Image (cartoon, rainbow, N blue to C red; front, side, top):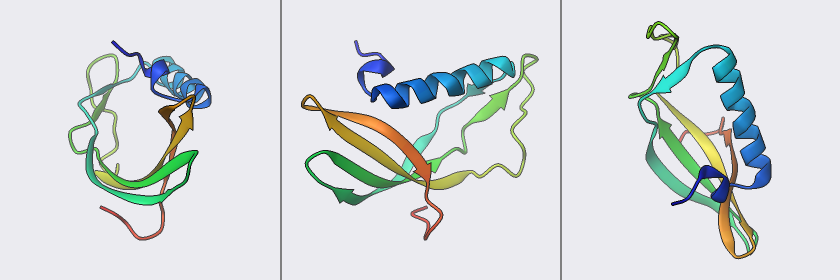
Length: 106
């Protein structure tokens, strides 16, 4: 069984821990799952792969401690990002993602 730490770079793991701490301090948690709607190769070389990805958040809610959905109605249901994967010690590890503001893959 793998943990997320086994599948991401140390830098991205640190970033994700900080995000989790921010959510926890706000007493909110995610309910539901984000799905990949579309994926396309942006670039690759011997050390990294970058993908364009359309993230579908239509099944996600952000709940406070009372169970109320605090996600704004204006939250994007689908958004384009670039996802970067890095090769380290023969393993392909996720190294992060960023919003893609050019033409949408969604």
